[in-house]
Image (cartoon, rainbow, N blue to C red; front, side, top):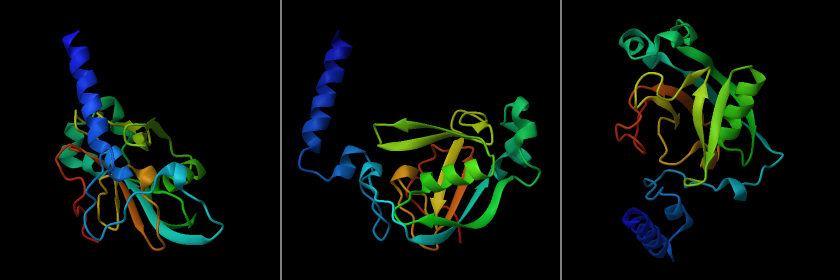
Length: 188
């Protein structure tokens, strides 16, 4: 009973603290680093008929070499020899689409398995698996992360609105919980 009362009190405090603040505070994404794009809520996205291009790739090269030691042995055969599930490819997207929209389409068009779950707490889709490689397959902190132009956003992929010329990389990481969200992670 005490846990239930404590949980209710914390929930009320979070709701009260969120009053009058920006909507991104509700989804625990503030602050977005200066100069980086603010998230767009999926329900507010307007998909246009205007075509743009960007580059997308999906890699699991962290699972090569020493990274293979962490991987569930039943999953070894799923890791491509070069660690590339989908090579860097320039693709078309439509104005207003998100990184998640793009990944979904690319996976579907190329018969690459992808599994996700919607997470209301963050108002975004969470990628559980790509190419049958799932979160936790290589340890308790392993899973899929994305970067855009070398930056790992501190919000979900369905909230990141693409821009013409963006470079999107989905990577299987061995230590997602290493505190690197929202920082430069890949030298472009």
